[in-house]
Length: 282
Image 1 (tube, rainbow, N blue to C red):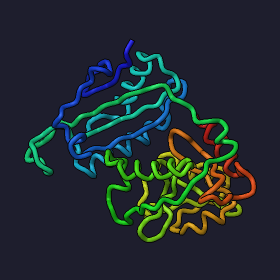
Image 2 (image 1 turned 90 degrees about the vertical axis):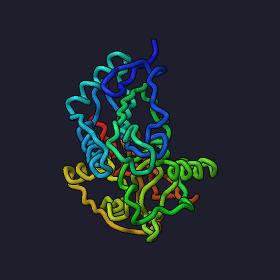
Image 3 (image 1 turned 30 degrees about the vertical axis):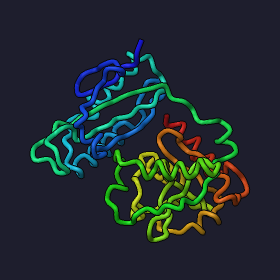
Image 4 (image 1 turned 120 degrees about the vertical axis):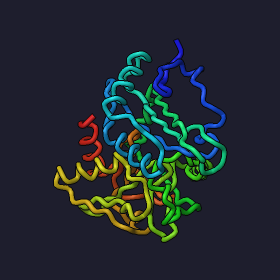
């Protein structure tokens, strides 16, 4: 039986979920999205993801009328119909179709899609040995407004990830045009310096990750000092521990950056603690 998706108020089979060739998400990347996981049919941190999607929709003036409760009901229906338990979930919102031109002359009809698929777990070995990173040769603008939103303009992220893969590593650290560490292609980055957890400030022009915020909350709840700052690559290389976060990988240790080892133990004590505390929430 084909997988079903939610498309503009209707649940349809994925192969016949057609979009207009005039959809602005297709023509201009004029849209936003969210990805999250379900654990045992429960979408994790759904309210936070819907809040971020709604915030970005308001910022870009894209109509969005769904509540968290409505989306939860839709996702539960999709998971049931598709017989999924632990799933990857993506919500995509585009401005939809309207009059031609970069700035449409009239109101567009937004396109909203939710699709699910079985979650493919990351290699268990990676959580034990850590990921290898490089520093990307591409820089993040310190002022470009779309960097703090999860938009459909993902070609720069693609190029950064491709750069990492071609060099035989898992991902790349992005520096902004002020030489501050920003994030990786698909994740936020954290350091551990002695007993302090450090992550780039939102002022570095990064995506305000849902998992990033959860980790900062877990630090506070467990008596771990944390800080959001602007800092350069040298502090990453000198850190006792480095780890990455996003909604799919959760908390992932890093073992090497630009071919150099990071810390003495991978995963480090605090990385392991936060990983266990995060998994306890799920």
